[in-house]
Image (cartoon, rainbow, N blue to C red):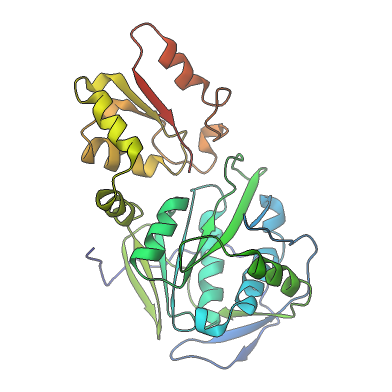
Length: 313
């Protein structure tokens, strides 16, 4: 994928990390690293599905920053120093702000490059695909699964290893242990990165590449076609109007048109709720008979489609 070497001025987003009393520590080439004093915060027990809390909890002083730093404190340096990490999520509220915090702490801990999906978008399987295709050291997934999104709702984060799989319990236990003793956050003094435009931004020997959230995943599908896609091809090969996909205004909306319309030939009107929204359109992104009732009604209507599906992440 070709990328531009120049980007518009960085966005200025608020950060809940308090750095007013920080002190400068050893600096990599061209980057000032601040040591931000902090203290343990209760409630950061981490499972293999990561850490999930209300947005207002994550927006608390140093809450997210503590967890990210505790993760780096839990990994062998060779697992990330001068390496590549992937960053993306399901498009929910707080993802953009959280991305900026994660990028700065990654730079502060010696990561060489961050690959982040445009607008912070990367589905859970797409993060895994990018990790494996780009031979990255691991990746952050910002998602709270089927839970609603918005200022009053949920947010979550987890870490996948270089295999593309979630970090094992041995690592998540270490993360939790380190949240109980954390005393500093290593924060790079760099501007926020514009996540709305594909391209590379460099700060000394650290760089951030904003990538197309779909291309690597689409290539993976092309190399190993999924059984579900084969079924869909069969269903609408004779009549495109007989297929419908409800993306529930979740992250799969970013993938629906490139996969179903552009690659497989479905009609554009076969995609509903295809624009990812921070609050999922005030909906609940859980593809079941209750929260995907609109799809169910369409399927049971007279002359309804033969095949329908809904997905959030």
